[in-house]
Image (tube, rainbow, N blue to C red; front, top):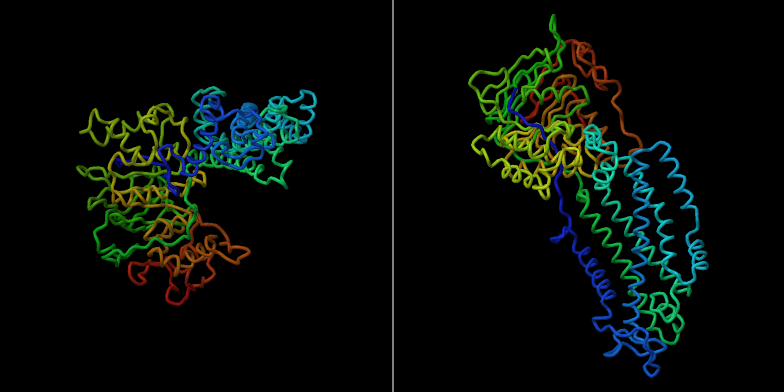
Length: 635
C-alpha cells in the first residue's frame, strides 16, 4: 500500500483587522470604554470625580465647563459625578442578572439538550412558563414588596432571562451532541458533566457571548427604567434613572440636562452589544462573505491530452492513470466498478472528479493510493512521478500522497493525543528528524492555522471539534511532504460555516507548496472555486474531461449538461430545478452500449449498440458521446 496519510480541517479567513486579543478593532474600542467606565465607577472616590450628593444652588443648571464637565442639575449637583457613581449600581445589577441567567440557563440548556427525555420535557415546560410571565409586571411587584431594592429586581430578572438563554443553549447542544467528537468522548468513558462543560460548552462560546450581551443590555434598560419611575434606590442616591428623570423634568427649559444621561446610556448599551459581537467573532472561525462563484481557470502549457483510449498529456504529469479497470468477484467475470479509466494530474494542478454517488470517482481516486476493495481485480497502470506504482514493483519507493477523507475523525485514533499521532507520522516519514518530531508537529499545526499548537498537541481527538480534527488530519497528511493530496469530499461531514475555510486552506497550501490536488466532490461550487480541470464520471467511466470554464459554460456530454442544469448555484428565476430521472446503473446491470442511454434526453437507437469510446473534442477535452458533433449544447 502507498505511503499515505489521512487528512482533514479548516482555514481561517480574516475579514476584519484584529488585534493581539484576537478581537476586531471595534471590539477593543467598546471593551476599552466599558473598562474605563468600570474603573471610574469603582475608584471614583480616589480619582477626584467629585461628590455626587453635594448641592450648590448658586451653581444650578450650569452648562458644561471647568467645574462641571457635563454641567449641573437643578440642585447644583455635578451630572458627571452622578453618572460615574451611578454606573456602580448599573454594573452591579447587570452582573447579578447575567450571573443568574447564565448559571441557570446554560446549565439547564446543556442538560436538556444532552440528556433529553423527561428531563428535557420538564425543563422546557419551566422555560415556557417563565417566558409567558410579563417581566415588567413581575419586577414592579417585587419592588412593591422589597421597596427600593433594585438588586432583588435584577436577580429576578436574571431568573426570567434564563429561559431565553436555556432555549438557545438547548437547541445548540442538541445539534452539537450528535457530532463525532462527542460520540468519541462517550466511547472513551468521559463523564456526562465533563462532556457538558469541557466539550459542549466550549463550542457554545460564540452563542453565549451574544446571549450574555443581550441579557446585560436588557438588564441595564430595565434597571434604568425602574429608577426613572422612582422605584429604584431612593433619592438622593445617584442612579442613571434618577439623572434621566431630573433631565426630563426640565426638558423644555434646560434641554442640555437630559443629553448626558441619554448619551451615556446609549453608548454603554451599544458598547455591550459590540463587545458581545466581537467576542462571538473571535470565538467563531468565520468564513468571509460569499463572493460570486467563478471558475478558477489557469492556462496550462502542453495541452492536448487524450483520455480513455486516447493519449495522455504531452506535459509530463505527476500522476498518470492508464486503462485502469477495477472489479470485484473471485470467480468468473468480475463486476467492474470502473472500466478503462485514464487521466492525469499535473504538478501543482487541482483536478476535480464529479458525478453522482456510485459513479466510481472515489474508487478511481483511492486507486492512486493503492487502496482497492478486498478481493478486487485490477487492470491497467498508474504511474507517479514517472514511476509505475500500480501494479506495485519491487525497488520502487512508495509515493508520498496525502489522503483527505470525508470523515475528520476517521483520520485520528481516539486513544492517543494529537501530539502522539502527529509525531508518529513525522517519525515515519522523516526519520532524519528523530528527536525533533514535536518541533515539526508544531510547525505543521501552525501551517494549517491552528492557534496555540502546543496546547492542541496535548488534546485527545474527542476534545476538539470536527473542524479542528480536519486541520489536524491535514497536518498529518503534510508530514510526509506530499506532492499530491487526494481529497475525497473533504467538506461533506463539516458544518457549512467551516466548509469554505477548508477549501481556502487547501487552496493556500496548494499555492504555497506547489501541491497537486485530486478533488472528489458533488458540489459544483467547490469545483468552480478550486479546480482547473474537471473529469465527469458516470457508471464507472469517464464521460467528459475539460477545463473548468468549458465544463461550466459549454458542457458537451448530456450527463454533464444535466448535472450543470441541476446545480442550484447561479440559478435565477427558476421555480424548480430539473431532475435527472432514474439512477446510476450498478455494476453487473450496466447496458452494453452507452451507460447513460436510459436517462439521456438525446438518446437514439445507435447509443445501445456498442460501448462508446472517449473522443477528443478541441484541445485538452474529451467526451464519450456518439452524437458529440450533432448536438449543440446551449451555453
